Length: 126
Image (cartoon, rainbow, N blue to C red; front, side):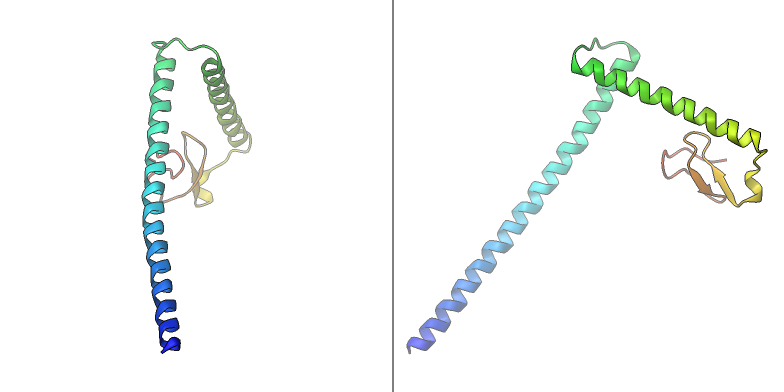
């Protein structure tokens, strides 16, 4: 009978551990969902304040002003890089129709010729 009690106790212990692991996994999944929601809301909040900063309706100072300045510098770099892309294309008389590849006019991403939207920036292609 002692062997039966030991096996029964082992089975109950395993069952209890499985239940704990299942509940823990379920709760961790809920925590992960909340963390993703926070990340999405943080992004929305940042986009909102950046739009306010761009419009000049928000006075920023300190670290926020530095971040806005860094974003402005990145935007300026993008404009310069896009101009370089156009210069390279013009210098080589690049014709996209010969390659089966086209480039997004907004961000310069290489696209399949049949692409309707840019996967990088979402711009509708002509």
